[in-house]
Image 1 (cartoon, rainbow, N blue to C red):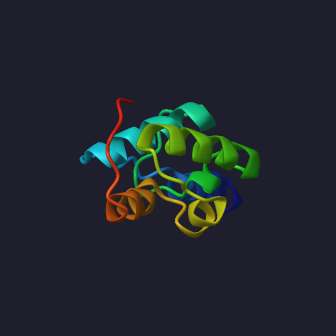
Image 2 (image 1 turned 60 degrees about the vertical axis):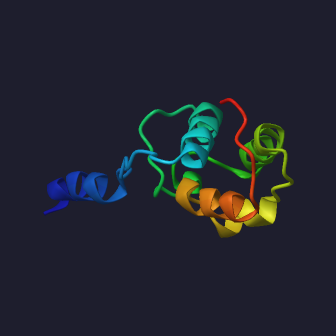
Length: 100
């Protein structure tokens, strides 16, 4: 049974890879993919489970502020750690989409 553990865990810990369909999601996902240097996460994956840390979150906040023209806090990033959740927050703030 021990031999099966790595493959079982790999399946459970793999990113869901759900694609972005909304403009805010697309921009946020591009920001996170660049920051954590991955290309396999999707909008429902917790960015902190796939490489984000507080320093990278600070970088994301700066890029989100720049691209959306709105102040997004670290607290919000930690409370809503998926692109989908972050997009909802930004859309509720009535952001204007800048070019990715």
